[in-house]
Length: 118
Length: 113
Image (cartoon, rainbow over all chains, first blue to last red; front, top):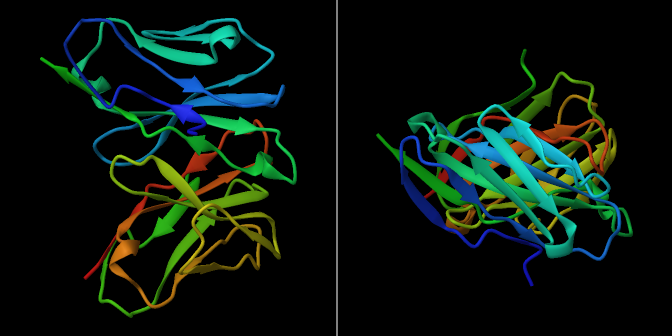
């Protein structure tokens, strides 16, 4: 089973629309971290946010906001008033405490391609 | 601010050739990683290292080798390149493991023909 599921493969919106990218994760650990990364067309991976499993407070950073709900194992990402520059692939990722030293890596979802049209 | 630097950015290899992807970081991070990204598949871990002299396999290590002689450098060696190794490769680093943000290099596009 996938540990990180991003069910939306592609989303297309018109500029200024709000858009939510979904992320559902699976873990048996009580201590874990969730991340969002952005991959613009140029290809680099840009870190957006990190959230630990003990902090369910939602976060807002400018036009970006994140909704973390442990009850539904979701960590969704909303872009308000989207812009063309938001066009990118967005990845959700999970880092678990695990056992045997498995805390070293991120498990990535397959990504959501967001296209914002002018 | 250099961060994680990997070279080359683009490379075409013939089947059976070998090459090394270079990676260096200047953030004094203990952990370093190599990921590959295939279209529509997210990123998968090839190898990782928790410090100089220590390396271990990730999810997809076959066909690759790594070494970590210094804290800064973590080269990835492809032996006997195969078309299945056509991918984008990302080197990354973090201060430690769990919870620490992993910072990525800009990627290396490798095509095996």
